Amino acid sequence: MVLSNVDIEKYIRQGKIKITPEPDLDTQLGSCSIDFRLSNTFRVFEHSKYPFIDLKTKIDADDLMRKVMVADGDAFTMQPGEFVLAATYEKLELADNVMARLEGRSSLGRLGIIVHSTAGLFDPGWVGNATLELGNLGRMPVLLYPGMRICAFTFEQLSSPSSTPYGQKPSNKYAGQDGPETSRFAEDIELKKEKNS
Image (cartoon, rainbow, N blue to C red):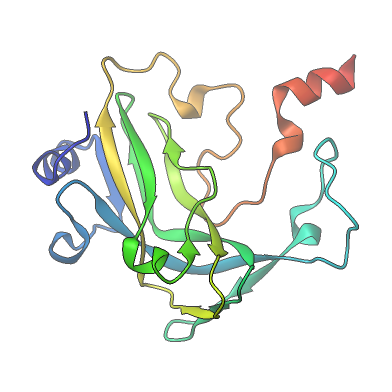
């Protein structure tokens, strides 16, 4: 069951949903979601350094994607067809019996800006700043400003607490992230097993 704004506020008071810094509920809380803002850090692909990405090979994130810092008041230009990683300004922490879903904002979607390609589910026990998979599907560049409301989170109550919250899973790769994290696909358990056999 998706939590209403009433329950989101209650879960925040009870500490089942923690958002740091504390959100401005007047502008960020919707009827069944809460908006998160865009941070100042982006990661942009360095297309000329690699001819392809081999998912079985661990690649240095700093070689694959260049970090770009945007000052408050300045904008990051999303070119048509571009894909970059960014992060939420707010940090999210979930109790062991609450999950979250990252959703795009309709106002941005109508301009061609998507905020996640696939990674929309946040497991119970998640802690960190969410990485955003930003894409511009439109035909015109769009300026994105740090601090703007970029995405929304919805929340659901689990039927019971998870026996293995995200931070305790052996396969967790992104717990506690504080900025846009590049792919750690090469660390998947099945690929590690394949390498060791």
